[in-house]
Length: 331
Image (tube, rainbow, N blue to C red):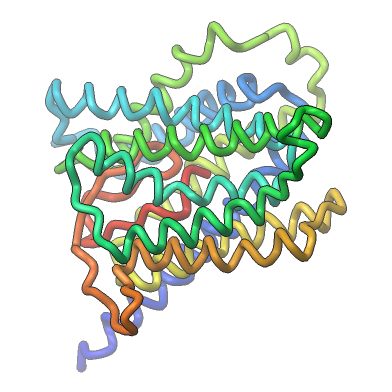
C-alpha cells in the first residue's frame, strides 16, 4: 500500500487540531468573565485545575520518564513561567476596561515585542522589512485601540486606557517568556507548561483572595473549564498540531483565535468594534504574518528560518516541530 498520502493526511489532521485549539482559545474570555472571579483568582485556579489535568495527561503518556530537564532548563522554564502567569493576569484584567475583542487584538501584537526584545537583549538582526511590518502593526494598533484626544488629555475614559495598557503589558510579558523558554530544548513542551502551571499556583497565592470563592457558585464550573479545556485539552491539541503543520499554515490558523474571540464577544455581550477599529485589524494580521513568514515589501517572500522553541505555558511552542510562530499568544 502506498504511503504517499501519509503526509497530507497528517497535515489535514494537524490543521483540524490547531483549528479546534484556536476555537477553544477564542472562548477563553467568556469563561473568564462568566466565572465572576477576579483576574488573579482566575489565573490561580486555572493553574490549579490545569496542573491536575495536564499532570494526569503527562503521567498517562509517560512523559515523566526521560524528561530531559536539567537544573538550568528547569530554572529557565520557571522563569518563563513567572512572566506567563502574570501575562494571563494582565490579559484578563484588560477585559474589564476594554472588551474581549479589543483586548485580544491588541494582545496579538506579541510577535513584534518578541522581535524588539530579541534585538535589544540578544542582538537579533532586524531587517528593513521587519521594520516596515512593525510600522504597519503600530498603525493598525492605533486604529484598533480607538483612543481619542480626550482619552489622552485625561477627560476621556481612564478605565479604557488602563485596559489597553494591561493588554499591551500582557503582550510584552508574553514576549519575554517566549525569549526565555525557547532556550529550553530537548524537553516535552507539555512538561514545560506543567512546570509553569505549578509555579503559578505558588506565585499567585499571595495575590489570590480565597474568601471570594464562597460566592462563586456556578462560577466554579467556568474555572474548572479554564483549567481542563483551555489549558490541558487546548495545549495537547496545539502541541500535536505543530508537529504536523508547515509554518505558513500555523501562522494563518493562529488568527482563528481572535476571530472567534470577537464573534463570542459580539454574540454573548453585544460588543463590536467600530469601522475605524476594524480597519486596523487586517493591518495587524498582515504585519504578524509578514514577521512570522519573512515577507518582504518587494513582492517576494523571504524564506523563514526553521526554529524550535519550547514555549511558555498556554503559548508554549513545542521543541519538536520545525517551526517558530510567535503569534497566537497565550490563551
